[in-house]
Image 1 (cartoon, rainbow, N blue to C red):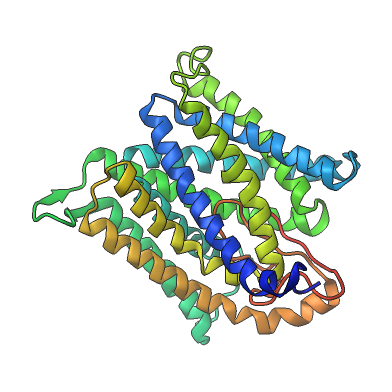
Image 2: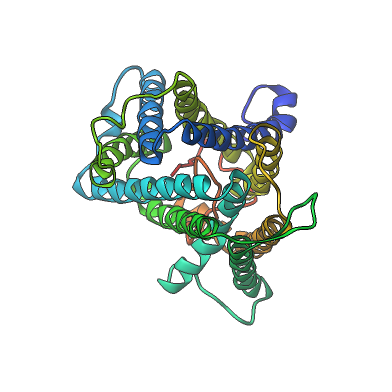
Length: 371
């Protein structure tokens, strides 16, 4: 069903409203993360609790959707190894993201999530999953867009510049630079996550099963990582303040669970490219919220770097949109699957997915996935 059901209003305005909510929920997660960090919660602890809550939420959704049976979630050894690797990449990325968020700022953290599509293209080109044709303007656009994104990230990390409402020039501190490096590391992990998901969703799991498995494994992986990263392993799990609980509850239920459903539905109706266009909105919302509620000081360098990254993102998406013409015949013959991420939308590599068309067609052939 191409329109996703629900009447004409839902058909025309539902995907747009859904993607705005996705970006709003993502921005609020950053505020929750920063708040929990200020209350003394360790980043790895927040990730562990968040993933555990998300796993429980998605498991309940899986049971409700399948009549209380878990049989469709069964996987073999090879599929489990791939899911474990994707989950590890996602877990490491979330840890890097939290470290960068605490060392830098929420607005910078959210802006750097727009690096993922460009880095995904770069990694895919290096390992041979994406072809680069220098004679094609669209192909060159993907390369140039990736370079623009990385230049914006470097600019944000190493040049803060004067305050937006002041004239004092501020150089980047050590913590700010470290935060920028962590955030770029998160974008690399997310890109690896995108690439590793391709064989999983193509041959093994449906989106809901994959997300449930990943959150469950991520919970165990985070708990194991905390054992090596934190000296007081038994004490760090205790909540220091009542307000830490709503922060992690929101991160797990809304930041992961509900965002997954909204994003998957929007992509099934409108396609990944349509959804990716909304990604920079979360950076704008995060900047506004962190300025109002966290009293974050905005700097010219951060704003210019964020704008540069967003410009690079749209250049990459413009170049990637041309793949639609070449991939459409493959879709008709193979009926392969598409994909998305729960926190940030990425561009698929060699997935043979029509990026501008809905993933739900009239014949009911559809699929999406998360990271």
